[in-house]
Image (cartoon, rainbow, N blue to C red; front, side, top):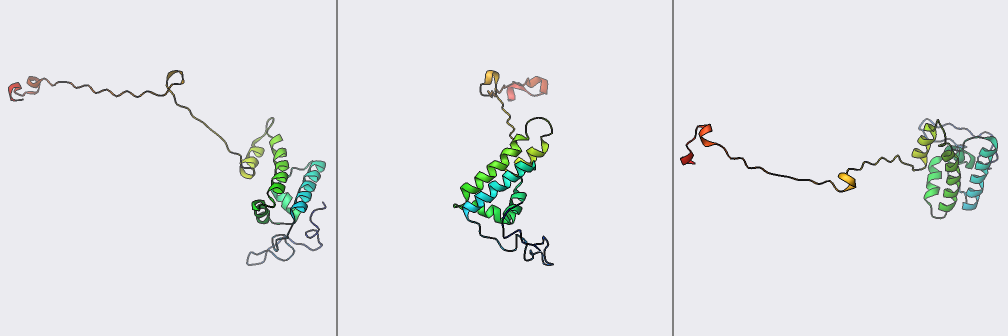
Length: 158
C-alpha cells in the first residue's frame, strides 16, 4: 500500500510509552500536516486499493493509509478547508457499507453505519382516533343523588 510517505518509513512501531503516549514513529506521535488536495488524493487512493483488493474500507484503515491518528482525522474533518475532501472520501467508504445492506447478514453493516456514518434506527408510533382523526377525549361527570333514608339520615335535616 502506497499511502503517506512520512508514515511508511522503516522502523515505525505501533506501541505506546509507559505513560500511554505514542512513541516516535507512531502516527499519533506528531500530527502530520496534510494539505486538502493531498488528503483527497490519498483518501481516494485508499478506496481504490480497497476496491482492487476486495477489502472493506474503514475509517481506521484510511487513517493508517494517511499516516495519521483517528483523532487527527476527525479534527481534519472539522476544518472548513478540509470539509469537502473529508466528506468526499467518507462518502466513498459509506457507499461500500450501504451496499452491504442488501440481502441477508446485514447486521455488521448496520452497526458500522450507525456508529461511523451517523445513521439512526427510526421507530415511529402513531396514535390516532378512527380514520386517522385526532383522539377525542370526552369527560363526563354524573351526579348521583343519595337516598337519605337508606343511609339512615333524616331527609328534612339535609
